[in-house]
Image 1 (cartoon, rainbow, N blue to C red):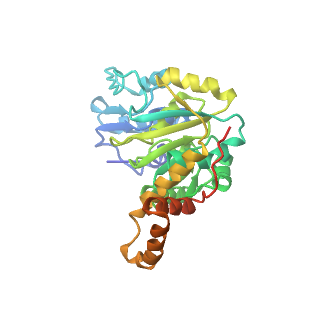
Image 2 (tube, rainbow, N blue to C red; image 1 turned 30 degrees about the horizontal axis):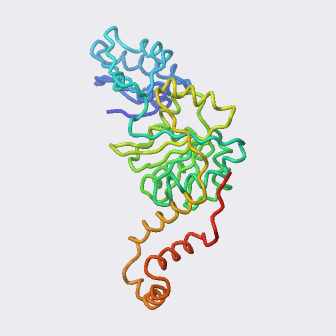
Length: 320
């Protein structure tokens, strides 16, 4: 079995450092992406090396892709034999995305407001105990979210300027749960199989529907449910409509989180953290807890404690 990138396989082939005489199958993963970013010539040359060395008549060629636009289908047919078999796992479904994903769209009137809104969206729809991926269109946007959004969890950024070795370390850290939030460009839209991702946030709708399908597909894996929320401005409304039409989904339009929703989400986060407190840590608080319960009652004493922990001790003002 040989596994490699097109560039490395082509290099080994041209140097005669690899033999393909025993190859029985050729598999190309992420076919649409491979052909879209300019690897078509590499792949054709690799196939030429393989077919020259092995029994070409018995060589099976298999192409995998989550999306197959017509232009990809046309190019892919060049690689295949005359007996092409297409296995479409979603052809009998009207929806082209994962059915266990809830698709939300949040209108943000100004681009600058997206970063300010990100922290609240992360708190309400994700929280400190959820695994979250935030997708941006540009590397600068990813850096801005990292530096300016003031998210309450540890984050790492991932884009084309990050060296490959560091990308691998970041991927593995996110996979292992060493940090909960990954801020990334499209480099994380494919090939990232982490079932525990609960929330996908997109700073804006992608210009091509295939990217939306791949991004939203990073959540709700292995039978789990997930949420994908997409920010959009007035100018981007047509992109939202286009994604709905082509991907055959319906976005649920939501507003920016209100203060009471943010506080309630913070309280749930704190409640989840209760289970992580070791019993040996409780003794020093026993006397104070007794005094508070005696003065305010059990429920109100806990409510006041949650308010202080969440940093919300003043009357709530609703957003317009």
